[in-house]
Image 1 (cartoon, rainbow, N blue to C red):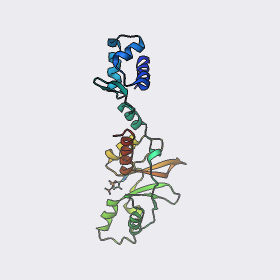
Image 2: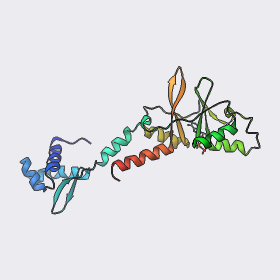
Image 3: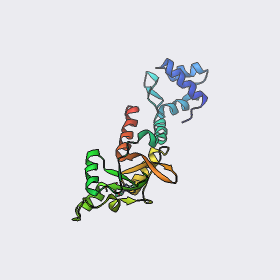
Image 4: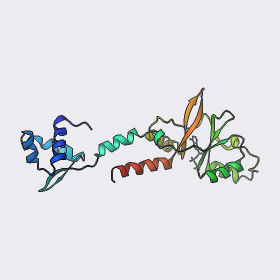
Amino acid sequence: MELNERQTEILEIVKYNGPITGEQIAERLGLARATIRPDLAILTMAGFLEARPRVGYFYSGKKPMQSMADEMIEMKVGDFQSLPVVVTETMTVYDAICHMFLEDVGTLFVVNGNRQLSGVISRKDLLRTSIGGNDLTTIPTSVVMTRMPNIAYCQKKDTLLSAAKQMIDRQIDALPVVERVNGAFEVVGRITKTNITAAFVALAEEYDL
Ligand code: ADP
């Protein structure tokens, strides 16, 4: 939110002299109380100032909600991503299940022999295979994974909001964070619904909510 010159001046006055009445602020500015009424209303509504009856205005010290929204939109994948957990296409489903438990993740990313992203495996992909009476020690992950080019992914520079939106739209729990290398994707990170939840909580804490 852009403050005009007078609003910025009022904010400074209140910051260093508050609590201070509207009348006193107007006096310092050499203006009538009525003239600055809309500015005080804007500053109060935006959360920059707080007003107490019979006390006056004081600087809230809180960042206004608008800047919280701005900050939320600015959050980038690269600042919130986790380490990716990657398996090979030839790893068996049995080993992939063990890996998922050991690494304590819900999604595994699959890479080919050139370490390029080729698939994604979720918990339900592994469960589906497990209840089919298959020999899990012989089926490779490449058979059960969701494969390229159907993989939803993101990059470090993308906004966290766009990553969250992809997960909701596609009804999935995680996105690989990728870097394009020679026309293919290298997996450099992982964004999950947990990362989004953590970012949401961190933002609220920053604003004392
Ligand atoms: P779960 O299957 O454990 O509920 P998800 O909702 O993440 O976990 O996965 C649902 C389906 O979507 C699975 O078949 C999985 O392979 C696939 N999937 C998961 N993540 C992605 C992704 N980033 N891009 C494309 N498909 C994905």
